[in-house]
Image (cartoon, rainbow, N blue to C red; front, side):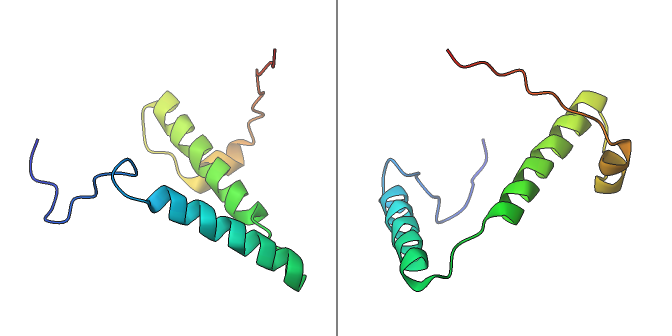
Amino acid sequence: MGEIGKNDWEGTERDNTWDIGVNNNCKDFIQAIRSGKYMNHAEDGANSILTTILGRTASYRNRVVTWDEMLAANEKLELDFHLG
């Protein structure tokens, strides 16, 4: 494997990135409640899911798939998920 870079990140096992992120998210959440300026991550969540579906679709079709193509297909995706 080639050189990645001069400032390789060694991961959360070696630094406190995870802890800082958790603390910042908690502080932001509490501040949002106290200020009445509630956080709404719905658009980010939807974009994340659509990106995942786009990647899945391209992988299944074994080719590049565009947003427009994926959305125009209007495919119904069923979740086969059972708890317990």
